[in-house]
Amino acid sequence: MSAMAGRGAVWCAWGMWLRERFGVGVPVVGAPMANVSGGELTAAISAAGGLGMLGAGSAVTADWIRTEGAIAAASGTPYGIGLMAWSVKDHPEHLKAVLELRPALVSLSFGDYTPYVAPLQDAGIVVATQAGTVADAREAVDAGVDVIVARGAEAGGHGRNAVATLPLLQAILDATDLPVLAGGGISGPRGLAAVMAAGAVGGWIGTAFLTCVEAQTKEPARQRIIEADETETVYGTVFDAASRAGWPDEFGGRALRNAFFDTWEGHEEELKTEDSAHDLWVEGSKAVDPARASIYAGQGVGALTGQPTAAEVLAGFATYRDYLSAALNDGSK
Image 1: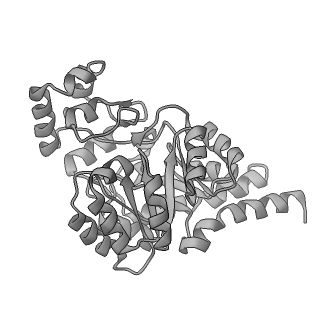
Image 2: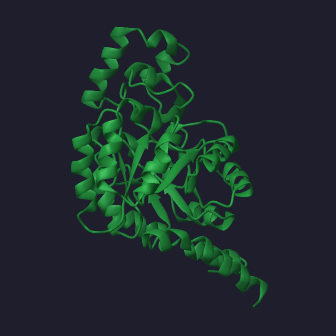
Image 3: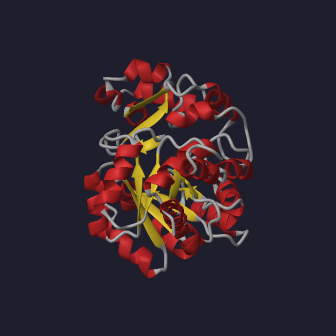
């Protein structure tokens, strides 16, 4: 076998883990996003060849998880559910509902998830966690998870802002033999090809699905997301301080910059007890006012130009193989 053929075989092998475990045709896992990835989007991603993930936020009920999980499962294709460890501690009924549903994959991140790994695995569920540093990844290995998500600072939603995706992915791959998914800034097939070439088993992708027709994203947020470019996201805890949902301060969020964020950045402790500002944020969130609401998105947001179906997004990502082939052939597709 030639050196070039050998490299191609390695790339194929790296992309096989998701196929072998979940029957996935395109190495894409839809990141679980609260208020975005309900049962419909989750099912659509899985039906199109990826692995959809239900985003179970802290504010949902166990019945919501059961109902949306049933929608996700209706097509018969594997799917997953994402939970926050800090929220499960206060809402054990969320974990109970997930165990009843028995999805193929469960992601538990942001807090002490170690008590929940064994019960999920005992139910035959593959367990993932998101790591924002190599130290996070080492803790995940010690906890016995099955797969690690290298979540870079470019990613939308909550996590760490410590290391960008590519250096983090390389460092975690060097630190463990567990399969590693890459998340953050992967806006299309070029990005997916890059992380697959580095050794990831697939992409953990959220922002690219934000404006899909199957997403729960409200229309004013959709339009603001489509208008935004790659420079318009910010990272911090302003929106968490305003929401009082209970997010630990060590996990801020990346969202679209707006007037509310600019007003309160640097005054987060005051914001936690400022009722008038909390009310302003709540009203803005209910109205989906882009000037006040938290619209979470990653730095890949500039690539979004319309409202495609999940199948169309997956079809685009599926062309990552063309870029890998071009790399093997000195740039010629």
